[in-house]
Structure formats: structure tokens, C-alpha cells
Image (cartoon, rainbow, N blue to C red):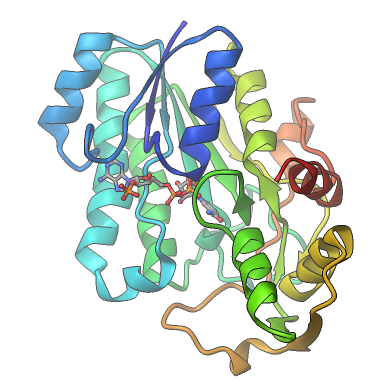
Length: 279
Ligand SMILES: NC(=O)c1ccc[n+]([C@@H]2O[C@H](COP(=O)([O-])OP(=O)(O)OC[C@H]3O[C@@H](n4cnc5c(N)ncnc54)[C@H](OP(=O)(O)O)[C@@H]3O)[C@@H](O)[C@H]2O)c1
């Protein structure tokens, strides 16, 4: 099976490339400079030369705060880029995996979101990703949309690396304690994609680790595991104003994966522990 990965040098794209190569697949992985998904002709040309059986779109403009001022760029990559990849995979009859986000929701629900809850994004990033999903659905029938959240991995920037670096510099840290998330490791997402890969269970899936925590609780857990003594002080979102609004509740229930009996995700604490050991 030939697999083409876009955004192949990103946090998820890098791990997915390594993971699938290791499983014996022929993987063709492209960075943003090699294959710009907002360029339909170029993306089409590259894809046509390879004729992959599967395309995995990990490419996105993920700088959530920057998206608020670079609105055109956000929609060009996250919406039009997704549309381009969807059109191309449909034309060559390749299965499409498209990665989306918990930020499609407004965060006002007081329990985990399922795939049957109505999206209502509150940031430009969230809107551009939501309309990316809409484009994928409009232009393709053989798609898997995986909504992931709180992603961390060995490559690229993420919360775990940032908070460890801050702990090196400071004796105490204030961390938001009123936003709920589910930290999800790239490796857990790779395993889930690997399971879905040979199937035709197309559709929309929430794809995150099990359980939830606040960013404060997440930090405490990381520090406990690494024996970091930096004091962690809980604070509210209002104390940390940022250009883009974040949903207060970002917790996703893997409802559809559980319905079809394919949910492979571990508890978030287990996945974090494994990551920290290898880190
Ligand atoms: N990180 C999270 O917590 C999180 C949460 C929810 C959902 N997600 C979703 O998960 C997916 C993977 O995210 P990630 O954490 O791996 O993010 P990432 O590390 O920022 O990776 C995204 C990659 O996309 C590339 N890219 C940007 N514009 C592109 C373009 N026009 N054409 C092709 N590639 C382009 C970037 O390349 P450059 O660096 O060269 O620009 C980067 O390598 C994304 O769809 C994201 O929306 C992430």
C-alpha cells in the first residue's frame, strides 16, 4: 500500500511517517516546501506521479493565535488546502484521512462532545478547520476525518516541551485550571490510523486519548512524573488573555470509534507516562 502524507515534517506528520514506514508501508512524506496543499496544480502533479492508495492530510496552519490576524492564510491552508486534497484523493480514488480538531466546538457543553454535537467554532483557526471538514465531506466519499486534541509528540512544539522548558527557568508557574482537555500523543493517533487504514468505515471520528484534565492538572502530572519541583499555581483563563479564544471544554468522546468497536486509545495518563520515559 502506498501512502502519501502531507505536512510530513510537522509534529504528527513526522511520527506518522516513521510509524507507517516501520509497519512496512511505502510512505511518501512531503514537507510544506515540497508540497504546498494550497497549490492545487502542484499537489495534483505530485500525487499523480505517486498514485497513492491512501492520502493522510496532516498539513495545517496550526498557530492558533496567529490565525486571528492571518485570516486569509488560515482559510487558504486549513480550508482550501483541505478542499484541494479532498478533490485530488477523490479523483485518483485514494482513501483520505484528514486531521481536524476539538476547536470546532465552542466549549460550552458541560460533558464530552460527540460527533453528533453541533460545531460552533469561536476562533479563526477553529472556523478554518471546521470549513476544512465541510470541504472534505463535499468533495469526497471515501474519507476519515479524525478530530484530535492536545497533541504532543517527540517532534515539533507542544505543551509538554514548553512547560518543561519554563520549569527550568522559573521557580513557580501559573497554569490555567478552567480549560478541560485530553492530552493525546502522536503515537496513539498513529496506532488508531493504522487500525482504520485497511477498513472502509469512512466518516467522522473523535480520536483522542481517554479521560480529561485541566492544563494545570496536566502540568502537575508531568512534573510529578519527572520529579520537577517547580511550584504550580492554578489560575483562570482571564489571567492569561490571548488573541484567540479557546473552548473551556475541549474534551471529545470517541463515540463513533466505540460504536464500531475500533477505539484503541489509552488513558491520557498512560500515554503521557510512556512519552516521558522516552523523552
Ligand atoms: N497540535 C495540537 O495540539 C492539535 C490539536 C488539535 C488538532 N490538531 C491538528 O492535527 C494536525 C497535525 O498538527 P501538528 O500538531 O502536527 O501541527 P504542526 O506540527 O504545526 O504540523 C503541521 C504541518 O503542516 C505544514 N504546513 C503548513 N502549511 C502547509 C501548506 N500550505 N502545505 C503543506 N504543509 C503545510 C507545516 O509546515 P511548516 O512548519 O513548514 O509551515 C507543519 O509541518 C493538524 O491538522 C492540526 O490542525 C493539532
